[in-house]
Length: 218
Image 1 (cartoon, rainbow, N blue to C red):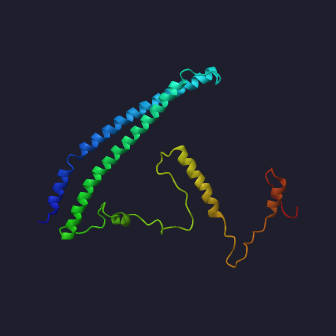
Image 2 (cartoon, rainbow, N blue to C red; image 1 turned 45 degrees about the vertical axis):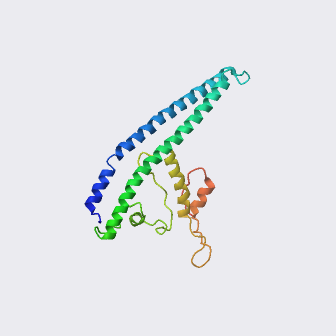
C-alpha cells in the first residue's frame, strides 16, 4: 500500500525527534575535547616561554638543565592535541552523517510520492539526491562574463585589515588593465598619440616648480 504525504511527514517527525539531543551530545563532546586542546596549547606556550627566558638571561652558551624535560613535554602535548583534533573531526563527521541519513530518507519518500502522483514534482524543492534544484537557482558564472574584470569587495562592513589590503591590491591590478588602450586600431595601425600642448612642454622643463601658463609668442 502506497504511503500518502501525511504519513510520510508523520514518520519523518518521529524519526528526527531524538536527533537534536544526539547532535547536542556530540557537540558537548567536541567542546570538552576542545578545552583539553586549549590546555595543551597553554602548556606548550608556558614551557616555550620558560626556555626563551632562560636564553635571554644566560645566553646560548649555558645549557638549560630543564630544557630536555620541557622539550619532551612540549612534544607530548603536540601529539595529544593532534589526536584530540582528529577525534573532533570524527565527531563532526558523525553529526553530518546523522543529518544526511534522515534527510536522504525523506528525499526518497518524496521521490516515491512524486512517482506515484501523490504530489506534483517541484524543481525548486531542495534535495540531496540531485543538484537540479540548486543549479536552477544559481547563475552560471562560466557564461555570465563581462568584457572587463571588476575588483572584489568585502562581504561585510567588518572586514579585517587583511581583507582591505587584498581588495586594494586587486584594484591596483585591475584598473591599469581596464584603462590600457588596444595596441592596434581598426585599421591595423598603431594608435596615434595626441599632440603635446606647449604648456606641457614648459611644465616638464621647469619641474619641480609648478607650471606657469605662457603663450607661444612669449
